[in-house]
Length: 173
Image 1 (cartoon, rainbow, N blue to C red):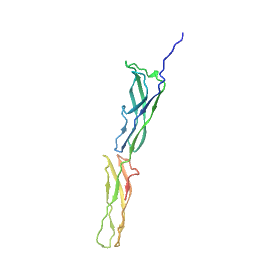
Image 2: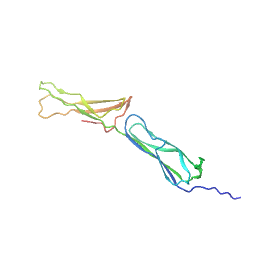
Image 3: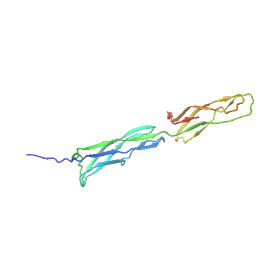
């Protein structure tokens, strides 16, 4: 007795979606509808129950993957095993740095022989709820100066619930 099993030779690709956003302290995830399908399914067949995974909270990039899927016929019967040429491709979730600028304040005074210092600064940009920022401002002038002596911002640190979230795009001047 000879038996034949029909196999669909169609090439099918399921690609997980990608997403990017600025750091906001919450996880960036892909929902199970963010995928694309390329290729030709047999008439009446469809891809369903696609499950995607991947998350990124802090600045960086993670893969989004297709963890499972089903192919069903028009009657709802699972025909996934009839498709031997299904490929899945990863996407990405990327969290980019939140831009903050720390600018040293300027001040002046009438000469009195004591050093003029100002340890204050202005933060440009918006911190995420629960974030705090610290920095040092240094600079001093005692003698009368014909040009401004700049204060210097250093040691900028952004913290979120005791975790250092400082990124290289935090600038001081």
